[in-house]
Length: 272
Ligand code: ATR
Image (cartoon, rainbow, N blue to C red):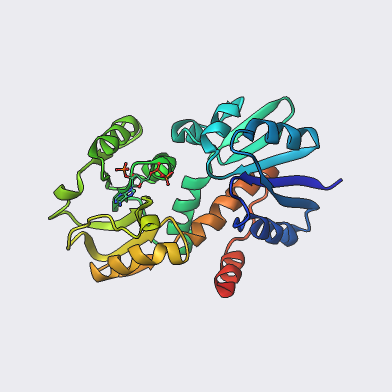
């Protein structure tokens, strides 16, 4: 019998996940179907229940339902627990297991695909919303020399850093205080570019050889990455690799098989 999965969101038509999971499935010849599920804004739980009742095995969850998915899960991984967001649901007998693979997607992309260590490096995370929170624990677990969170609303960065400081060294700084500090990796987890805006980074924020990473991909990442190059970033990357890596991690959660990501990332880049 074909195993059924889907990505649930609103909107969801733009999602690349069906393409990515179809590629993963074909690597191992797995008999699975992966579709898009548009849930009404007030009908997430009912949509999930219907998908599950029809024999669905698991779901990816995208905006704006990650917090609702977190609430719906009857069991959660530690990384999902701390992210307060779930992007992967696995229907496991009577349980609904909730996981969050976004942070692992980010760290695997930086370390394995871009070949950059996080451990021992100085990392600056821009933003303190859901996207930033989702990657905090996996970043801390890589043991950076410093993890600094900067946010337009400094209080939110402070709260985030305080919450996660029990797992490892992290701190918050207002943008205005970043002058004179240099980082090996600067990660944009803000939604600033959606409004055509840029986080106010000072000159000198990139250490020699520094990497600028935007968690968005394609055109949405271009504004920040151009800015980062002007500020002296030696290497830039958008979040397409993160997207594929988080999908691979979800595939692993569901099926215990780790797909090959490099050919899938390459194929997506070629099409764009
Ligand atoms: P997401 O789920 O994408 O993280 P979010 O929770 O709304 O969305 O968070 C958006 C993040 O982008 C926040 O950190 C926000 O800063 P504030 O907390 O001060 O709102 C940040 N952001 C949005 N527009 C920005 C801008 N023009 N400059 C800098 N940061 C911005």
